[in-house]
Every structure is written in C-alpha cells, then in structure tokens.
Length: 213
Image 1 (cartoon, one colour):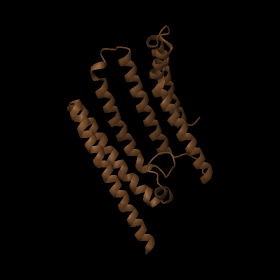
Image 2 (cartoon, helix red, strand yellow):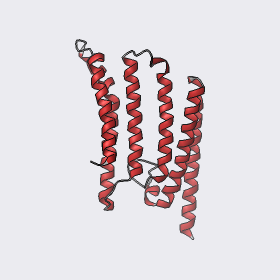
Image 3 (cartoon, one colour):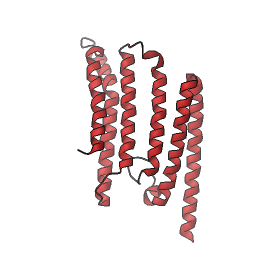
Image 4 (tube, helix red, strand yellow):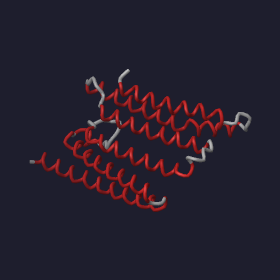
C-alpha cells in the first residue's frame, strides 16, 4: 500500500470509528424506523461522502493513467484529496461532539468548522500549482486538459486565490462575528470567481493568438 493510500485510509477509519462509537449513544434502537434511518444517515453521512470522493478520484485517475500509459499517480492530486478528506472528517467529528451534547465544544464549534475550511483552502492552494492536468480535480475544460500551457498558469492563479481566501477566512473567523464573516466571505468568493473567469479568458485569447502566428 502506497503512503498516500495509507494516509487516506487512516482518516477514513477515524471517521467511521467515531461514527460507530457515537451510534451506540446517539442512535435510539427503539425509536420509529424512520427516525433510526435518519439518525444513522446523520452519523455516517460525512465519512461515507469522504469515501465516495476518495474512491471516485482513484477510479478517474486510474483510467487516466491507463490512457496515458503512465505508472505513478500525481502526488499533488493525492495530497489535495487528503486535505478534502481531512476537512470532511474534521467537520464530522465536530458535528458528533455537538450532537452528543459536549458543552465545552458547542460554543465554538461553528467557528472552528469555518476556520478548518480556511486552513483547508490554504493547503489546497499551495498544492494546486503543482497539480498536473487530470480529469478528477481542478478547472477541467477541453482546453485546459488539452493544453498544459493553459492548465499550469490557470491553476497557479487558482492556488493564489485559494490561499488568499483561506487566509482571509481564518482571520475573519478569529476576529469577527458570524453574520459579518458570512457576508464578507460571500463577497470575496464571488470576486475570486470573477477574477478567475477573466484570467481564463485572457489565457485563452493569448493561446489563440500564439497559435495564429
């Protein structure tokens, strides 16, 4: 088993183990069947989602490696997936502690989840410039997948934007209140999306001009 596979497995095992431990307290076996199903879905939703993402990305990357006749998966892509799994399981653990009524966690749980999201964006932003063209993650269009010269600068810019939004998210969460954080984060995210679209159009026009010469 490769090192990245082991890391992913550990994170998923932690998530499912926490679900099993919590289910013995949280799931009421003598409740109505619909309530039992609802409780089980709540307890196992995020670990299951993380597993589906991990398996899906592996499957897509395996197909790409077969088509390209390559041997090794992209380490940057695997690290991005790891951070996504870590974020989902981190949120999952926080949700479980709140549902189980741990009073010490409840006052700052929502703020911690947002801050974890900001840290995840920073980590992913640092990895995006190193990610190779792939069909699993990234800004995937027919043009970016076909032209590495378009993919690389676009994802370098996307990395800068993710790091910037992540840092702002962490700082806002640490020093501002919830409603203000939500409003500012929405505005920053929208501005980032507009900048990325404009930069993509600029790179596309430049690529067309260079081919036309």
